[in-house]
Length: 245
Image (tube, rainbow, N blue to C red; front, top):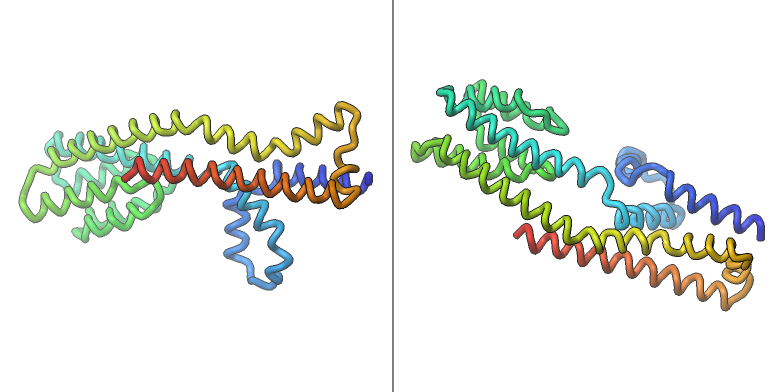
């Protein structure tokens, strides 16, 4: 029984302090698939559970990209207002912002400097999660080139739209803070319950692993907990998709 308790404690510590899901996914993509599938399913299930409970660094990078897009448009409008050409203004605006991955915007600056297809470069950069606002800037560039409209006014409209979208996103994030906290609570509730039972002098591990009834309760509780986490996460994702459309 002491061995089972030690293994359970080790698994809990590994889930809490282990590598991030992004690093695990990168390792899976860069390593050869030599391990049989049936051996890797527990780790994959734990990684999926961690992704559901903790979104990780991807959400922060997407937020940083949204902020960078707004700053890029503001810098571009400032350069255009100063009387610079559209291409020169875009090159200066790209160097004035600090996105999470500067290499994504380098093709945009190169296209503007060398007379390339700027809308196509902006559309390609907009494929980065969080940089979707660059598609609007690409559309404004096409309209200004084809029709001859004022790029300054179009960029100003993009800035207003991006600011309103970001304000709406923050309001939605505040409203969904409760469900996200519930997901984290559900993810850690089983371990907390076991620790509370041990603190009260009980033997929860002995009951859970000591017979068919306890093992059935363990499986049922784990299944219900995972189902609750998945269900709430899908509700949050559906609300975010509905608000973004």
